[in-house]
Length: 317
Ligand code: TXA
Ligand code: MG
Image (cartoon, rainbow, N blue to C red; front, side, top):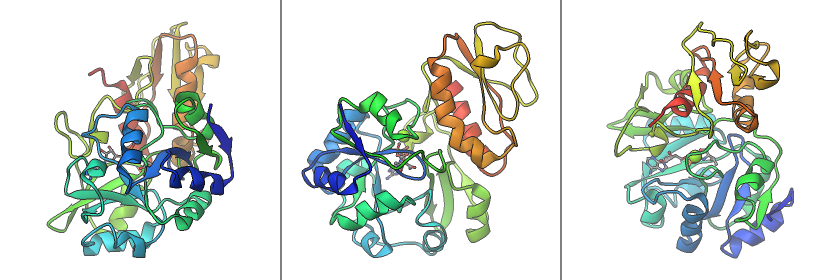
């Protein structure tokens, strides 16, 4: 079983030896390895059971280091980086040869971000290579927001998990790319759309794709619990059902056993809802129920990304 500890120096040793380790970030936990070491990168794909066509995000700790990995940074990308890094934002930028095709699945752009977590920033500063890190869950399953979540699912395959407490944001990073200087959101996430638009003006959102996705986080049946999840329409309530559970925004539904319901935020705070989302879905998945009903949230702030995850979790493909 993986050792779980807050000692970042131990994580550094494992990483320098070519191992993969669980690392905390403000969004979700990552499964990290040396992005410049092909064996470590292959281990990440193997441990996650992730298809090789689904590229990895490269994590670093400074804009100076970033320049070693990308050939250019468009003006709007620079503005977003200055404003929001470290933070829950990933930028797609043209890669240098130093970043191998394994990491980007053959694409010409590399996904990069500076995560906002003290322990992981300290770790990154101490390393002379960047960290490739997908979310530390088996492919297609709910992302982990605690070290224990990582241990529960991948603990027999990784030697070490750096424990940085529960993820402060709770949703994967927002992914932004640029085409002819126009910014495009490929994955809604922990950085709200409105905040991005305040800095660079209107952006387009292109997160739906059924085949050959540019960012496979766009695949519809992603982020799913094992139990069937049914996303309700706004204002809709489920029929009474003794074998159903529910994920609700502010207050439980009548007609569904209260023990089988989880509330995202009693005060209606979308940031709190995001932080609770994945842990609540995990809990619901473990209860003796046949179906999970989910209530849609308001489409604003992190509500967009939460609704996106619920839609994908409810997709039957
Ligand atoms: O918050 C996060 O982004 C977390 C933490 C650990 O940083 N990481 C994460 O990684 O969510 P992952 O691998 O679960 O999701 C990364 C997404 C995938 O959907 C992948 O297809 C997309 O980013 N992606 C990575 N590189 C890309 C590229 N070069 N072009 C297009 N999409 C890319
Ligand atoms: Mg993921």
